[in-house]
Length: 228
Image 1 (spheres, rainbow, N blue to C red):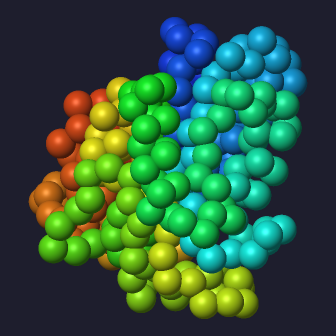
Image 2 (cartoon, one colour):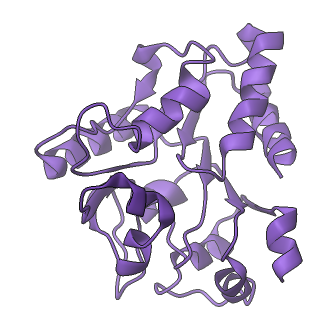
């Protein structure tokens, strides 16, 4: 899964070295980032002009927390490839004004976008980024109220402090991406993947909207395939 995603990603970088890459945190893209780091070690010039925007971030984590999306992406990708800060757009994980921070990121994206390649994972409830299932979905950067199923995720349980909200790109930001790569990995995804594969599009399964995108790749790992 990760090797195929890396192949798709690097083809896009070769076509446009300064593309805007939307990076997700979490376990799903970990292997992809390692492949990108390996490619950087072989040929640093291949991705040194790439621009990066962070997909989402939790609200309320303390300074120095290893559970932030920022820490995850920095450790797995940005630091190993010595990515330049001036080519990085990121939600401030320590902000005390998350709504203002979302507005700032939206302004930055309107200046620098659209996203060329967006990496996504899928939540056990079908969310994309922190766009949670509901009556309606938000178009642009916004503060999202986290659902019970998201808050029950193992990583959240390890944080040690209660979380309730996150900052995230909206479905419109994601859909404006020229290419989307959804990576589906990990245990407990059988039910949501089966719903996704029905191709029925609904707000109660945000990932299902990807069936409407003209250039979306969905890659399942062997563990997920084995459950189906």
